[in-house]
Image (tube, rainbow, N blue to C red; front, side, top):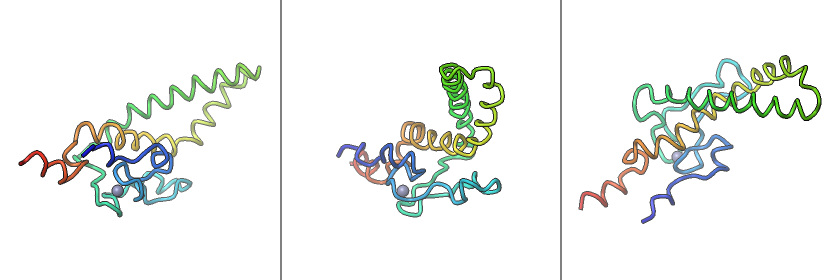
Length: 136
Ligand SMILES: [Zn+2]
């Protein structure tokens, strides 16, 4: 059986859904609440996938966060330059970054779940199906 069938696609990534089934939520709080935008569920309410395979798993999300922020600054600078408004970039880009912070935070975690999780914790991610195939 092709194990790639068990993974959710880009639509689920954008909607912040479970990386395995693509249906369950990953975050419990509202994206627009400063108190709860970072609240992450312990496991998928649909397929029961644990979202944190080991303690500190989401520590690695800071690398994705860094990449997203630097990428946003570069794209923002290019767009501001093309619009001939580069002199305002020093004000506009930081304000946009602060407003986008909840999205950047969540999608950094989602990158960990979608990219790193299936690679590093294959057995936990794909569950018993893979184990039962290998143990025969
Ligand atoms: Zn799920």
